[in-house]
Image 1: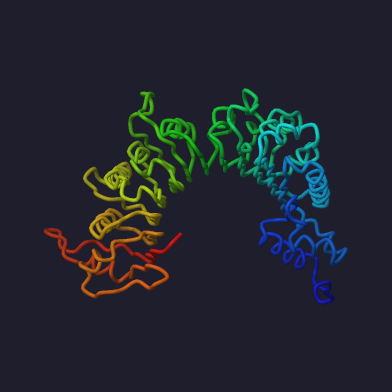
Image 2: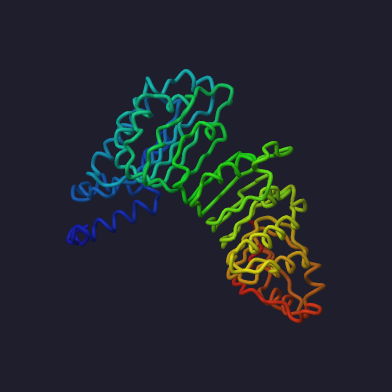
Length: 411
């Protein structure tokens, strides 16, 4: 303690901030008394307590069934924010509700005034809001419109209840005037048509529970988007003629089709996209549908995206821009994997996560037999290189991607 107290203010501030950030911020929760970092800051030293920056990263976890406890926790969190001076804030607010009946009996806009937190919005830099539907129409929430000059990243969701019981405003305009907003995550499909956001300025977008048509329509107004993560739901057929044709987006560099996405069983989104700037691709497959993914759709997507680059001729094959490829839970055989790698000659990172490969099939093709360890199946990189180095018909040797890591292990 004495040694730490002799440090200059800026050094002490850096150390304490790192401790808090390593824990994901100061946690104020109805379920926990408080993490070690918060306890140290509050109890060890007045000097530590007076360090403003440690109070800028706050997580608030409330429970609709514990009204009194939630009010106490919320008050402590607001008090912590008041110690942060005029510094930018990183806020996480989660309002849990395990039972619909008890949640409806607890009116958050009446029993717990969220105004003190909302009134700090002028300093919000990032905001992760998982809140009840009633909060979206509250005066405190709507008063934030035009008062978010520093907001760069927003994650917004509504507490998961029966959708027929949601009480939401006709439009959510609170975040329509955010000049610095670049990253948005929309956690519920029910919020998607209500949100008025500066879509044209976004560089990072995550969407959950949308159809392929809805994803394409949103991309059409996201002119400078660089990173897209999507969870796609089933869609019988496209009924919108404006989104039926392949859509070219010139700036998307990272595409992630996320956990349990329906699209990875048919490749519908891949069939409708051309991404000439794509450098990183990640696909996650349903565990129960390992063999039903569309390898053809993926291959055609890679070739099509490459052909839209102005520096590549119309007969080019594969994708000469992709440097990172991640496949989670695919059921790839030897020939399928080799064919896929031929289409990605510029890879510097290739990962198979929980691949469960056909070991016998790989043994049959590999000159040097190998066995996976009992705890994890790891495909040796040398096996990949030997396969790719084999003669490729009239073209001679196949180009060898610079594959640096090919783990095949449980996720």
